[in-house]
Amino acid sequence: MKIIEIFKSIQGETSRAGLPCSFVRFCGCNLRCRYCDTKYAYSGGVEMSVDEVLQHVSELGCRLVTVTGGEPLLQDAVYLLVDELVSAGCRVLVETNGSLPIDGLNKDAVRILDLKCPDSGMCDKMDLGNISQLRKVDEVKFVLSTRRDYDWAKSVILQYQLDEKVTVLMSAAWERLKSCELADWMISDGVNARLQPQLHKLIGKR
Ligand code: SF4
Image (cartoon, rainbow, N blue to C red; front, side, top):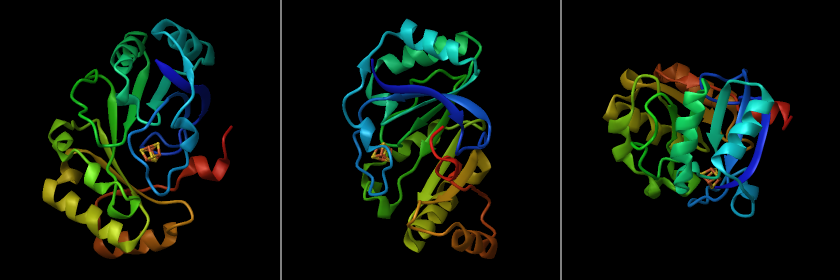
């Protein structure tokens, strides 16, 4: 598989935000979100075997592992890697951009589905069929740039009763929307979602 980087930092999003975490960043992405902060993952990377990735993760000494990208589900080897990480006793979070089917992933992995809102420019690429695959342990994330995005996210939550199925996360896209503004909307509407700052942006890459 083609890997951009493997490193240890603090998980910046999801319900595990704030926890030390190892990250495996896959190369390649089929989307081009307007706010993308990981353009360096679009190409390049190093070819690694599953065993090499496992060895590297083991050396980092952290059992919370996030598999991310780019888009990790573009490479078939991700399924075996997640299986092996789970077998090795890791708590595995798989962050995926919502455009590809998630049903092939190991059932003990947590799926973090990043549903792209209209002002990401990628909303029409979403595979909303994934919502029926979600379990209580999984999470749905909306990164919001505008009020239009917020209203779209609210309509999706309502239509699919998402907040009854999974943890729903809302965050303001960095330098596009203020968290305090988003907080006001959420409080006013009583949205059953968790506001999260993009912690990794606040602390920078460690
Ligand atoms: S899915 Fe992620 S990596 Fe791909 S373009 Fe969007 S923000 Fe960037």
